[in-house]
Image (cartoon, rainbow, N blue to C red; front, side):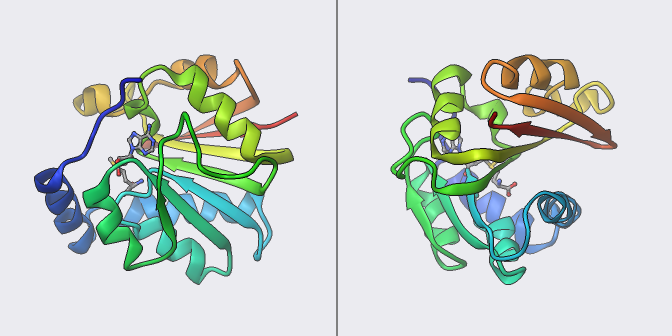
Length: 180
Ligand SMILES: C[S@@+](CC[C@H](N)C(=O)[O-])C[C@H]1O[C@@H](n2cnc3c(N)ncnc32)[C@H](O)[C@@H]1O
């Protein structure tokens, strides 16, 4: 299965960007979106937490949150901030129907073939659980190139497994997918 790997140098650079607050706006907006969907204390899964910045905020906000990331160098950073385990979106090392919501920030565009990953996310969500996907809005920020998505693309990809609503809040897209 193809997906984009983050090596030591990329992970160290990403950690530097996070440490200077480069993505703080995106973490704050994502936390706000989670709070609208899941009451405090809810069980959350973050897929692709990277260095763990959003994961740390979710835990501080009172959620029972765990991260799953495919990159060992990224995991070294995130483990210092919360509970993160090694794994991939298309084979989650987690039991079924365990989570109130799953969150994927700036990572879905790295996942390659989405079908197996979306079926896995659906498997680990409780009935009625949410999958929140946050990506850069490629249509409004063409410079992000393949590191973003269009609203239509997110809708098409997610609707294969979920009921989906996509909200555009510049410069981000928030897709709220719900397990029926
Ligand atoms: C651009 S980073 C974003 C990190 C974090 N969400 C943030 O916004 O700071 C993408 C992360 O997703 C992870 N990732 C990519 N494909 C993955 C997959 N198929 N399963 C799990 N993690 C994946 C990478 O290892 C990396 O840590």
